[in-house]
Length: 379
Image 1 (tube, rainbow, N blue to C red):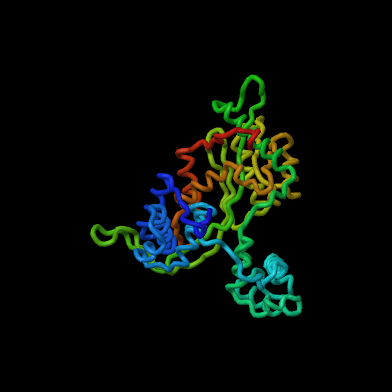
Image 2 (image 1 turned 135 degrees about the vertical axis):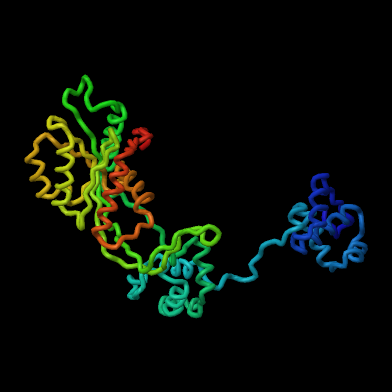
């Protein structure tokens, strides 16, 4: 029953009354909703349209419209504005799709120099190409128009996120092989020999840490001073002396670290590391080496050296982009957090000596790194 056909009754439940009362007293809700809540409450109490108009000071058309919507579609409809589009959109869906297609294409593919779009560059390109592409309405499009179109489609072509593509088709198989090696080491932590393995086997995790910088001071460090300087003070400027590479391996049974500090990490430097590992273990033992597919590990020179020691070394390769599977990374992390942290040296030679001294300190108190999780099904 409509309001204009007689006095229609607007019945409110206790819950609706409580919500409308709360909205009517709100200081943060939109003013139009506060006013409409007051109108509906007074109308439900039996007040006339004229009395509501007099008490609230709102227009009579607004009161009529609010009450009619509440009677026809419910209290919530009486509070809200009905969405309506006064005229057809000037930018068609086809035009928006054209903008989106441009945004999803790199600028360089459209003959521009940039790799990614900026919003202003995209808006400029859209404006320049709109007429010839048949979307005249976009000929004067600015950044805000283009931004709204992108926002509707949740696009941000001016930003970039990175992902890691698995380029190794045998990633899962190699990962399982490495984890099986770590499980084997964990099962036989007390020694390399057991009843089912008459030949001793030792497992060494090997990798390189290149680009360790030899950075020198331009002025002496100032030590902490009680009440004056709580920290070491260091001049902002520094001197670069060059870089070195740490070639290292860690015995997964004992935590002993093998290391070479070299200017480069070619095959000859890697072979030198293998020779030091070879000399450390009993001649009858098998040395199982966990390592990646770096060129120096599988080069002709390295393979020629391994051929002179048949049966001595057994390679277990980590998958491509799977360096996190190699436990030597834990040792490198420890180096970075201890003696390499904030290191300053006067020369490359001093850096090499400091690194070898730090590794000697690690070997004086070795830590056996363990792989804790062996969920091969879910790995």
